[in-house]
Image (cartoon, rainbow, N blue to C red; front, side):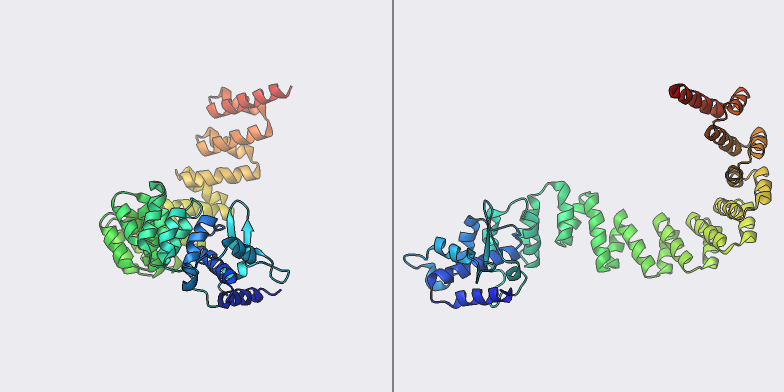
Length: 392
């Protein structure tokens, strides 16, 4: 039987003169109403009996004798034309309406009777508390939503307030020092695009609001405001600004900020220069003492396999070049060159040499270096001898 036929069956029951069918329709509508009010579990019989009264026709509410609930439930639970019933009974839990009825195609049935909100609190369970709070909030039943959230431990409330979109409650928690609430409030304000409130909270010392504000300003491409915040001493704003300028490939602006001492701009500038293969500018900045330029210059030289320039810079005291040079010598398996540099005092070469000798299991070479005072070689030697002893 097509799902739509269930709706027709429910409509006929609502319009019937048979009290049993009318009561059955009220029971089904009660289950649907509870579900839409957030009670997503099967509806237990005590709650169902209370709520169905809201959906009964007026003449049946005070009928003597009252319609038989047992008969009405039995009618609603029986398969319709050999297919699905209007209500599915879950033993030990309660009743649930067939999915098609819950999806919204329920004919003229009211969605959620306002009286449900005063009946639900006495039947809330841990599994239904949050879903009912969400539904109550959507329905404008803020007091109920708040009351349900307050039943949860304090550590969970920020998340719950965020889920129902209660900015006011989050503000109160955040102002009381709840960092989780401050974070979720900032996220909520960011989703709403409310830069004014974010800025006010940021100016009052809320770091979460400050970070979110910087992210939004970057997303909007607001270089001027980000620059003002960065120049005021906000490192997150400086980072966001540098990322934005890098995305725009604005070398001029990055250079100006880097030369003014902006660490983030200097880092992004160095990456862009390396990406462009601009050895001359990187070299000039590295020789001027700019660390990020020196790092990216050494990386770029290593990528190009320019060991001569790496060696010259390493010999001049550039530790970034020395590190990359040692790595490239390892890649080539050039033990002689590593040993020569290690003996000349290059700690990067010494470290890589010891590791390479240990990897090759060269106990004699490690022993020689250990005897010469290389502590790391001695450690590798002890480790290897111990491994060999266990193997025997």
